Image (cartoon, rainbow, N blue to C red):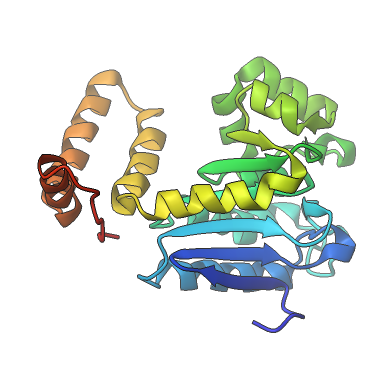
Length: 259
């Protein structure tokens, strides 16, 4: 993609990196950026050579949420959420490969919840997370109302949402909001190492793990057990399971290929 694209794509073997590219505006979302991002996500989903996705931001921020100066925002905020943010959140949750958010700076509002909706969040120690919605008389969106209480519990979710206080990456890791807080200088290297590690794993099973964990939070224990059985039946009939078992018995590294 040209350097003036709002979303840059780069490949490193089986890992695709998408970079939000409005650094002067802390990569805040516009309608145009959403369209480029959705197209890039769909391209990753349709490319069988991609086995892990990393999403990050250009410059000193990850994503500052919705650009309030964007002419496409208008006054129908609910329409924007339904038309743009809901499909974005659902697209991330339906990706056929693991998705890592590499948070290199501030992640605010929808930008923070966009990151939390990814499978794993790797954040620079200087990064921060802000539920900025209450400052403009709104509620958390881009999945925030669903994600926050499940990640950190009702009390912390309400505290973060109501006060809009900035949360450091260290504290976000401590309370279980993100996967890892990394020294800034090591963020890119450690994130790519994790991405390459996941890419070598059975990604079809990893995507199924995300789906089943999410679904299990909304059903009974007995139904969750049935859901496990259904998923195991599907995965047990796939090539990666046979390869994994064979590799284990032959005491060699498995070569997974399902997606």
